[in-house]
Length: 64
Image (cartoon, rainbow, N blue to C red; front, top):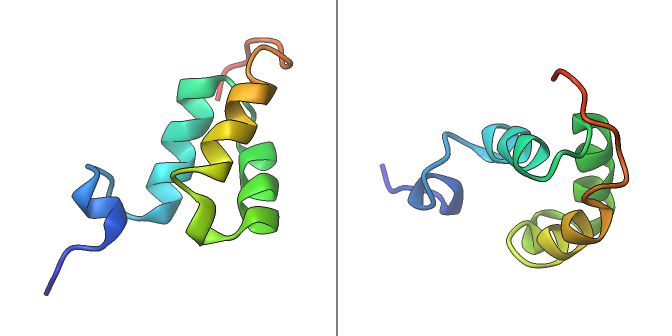
């Protein structure tokens, strides 16, 4: 079985990747899911990161 793009980048799957992005950028997971849904999986490593960089710091630090 070949690795998918998420596994090649050190994540179990897309869900694990999105959870890590939520933690890394301090953006609530629900917001990350919403952005990822609108942008689509083809933008996970480009457009989503840009959106998270823009959103970084807009949310108070919360326990996830």
